[in-house]
Length: 229
Image (cartoon, rainbow, N blue to C red; front, side, top):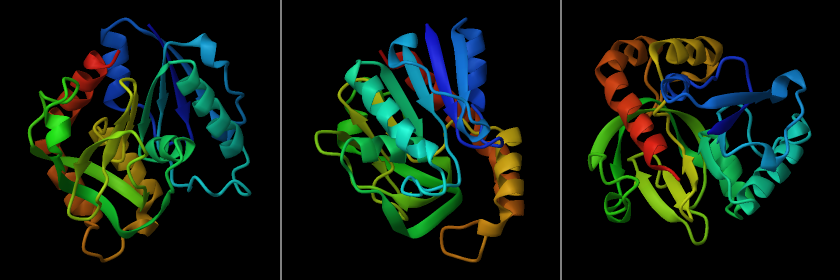
């Protein structure tokens, strides 16, 4: 399988997804938009993975490449490619599918539990996951579930934590791919966002809680990637 990954900043990489790609012998190509890379044709790959970033999907004046990226995502969906978006990637997919992306009532930064919806628990793509488990979050924006999509999960701080559109377009607001290295990087680069609030944990707590959760979330990420068409 040929997988193409899109990156928005230097410090948000594939995390555990890179190990899954290597283990399964898949081909990987990359676009680093912050370096001025050009996007490929949607026919050049089988699966698209869109990673996160600190920018907002509506900051097109500041990040002009967002316009081309949205056109690219729309074309990939139209071409029946499997598309996975994580955090900002999920917000971009939601926007392309017609859902409004906006600042949520709470920022979520740190380790907080999500609860899977009944519909998700009964879907073969997610039925192996526990009903409730703790995942890594780092987001301020949110979105309603796009029209026609399956709502996947919710948390105390965020009503919509993910969606599945059709059988091959997946948006995850949270991070299942996080590793100790990736969490250290985002914590170091985005430390200014760690302010006292109900759903924001201190950096020291984020780092100390991680080891209890990395095996669970990375296994969940791999399981989803295994089951996607």
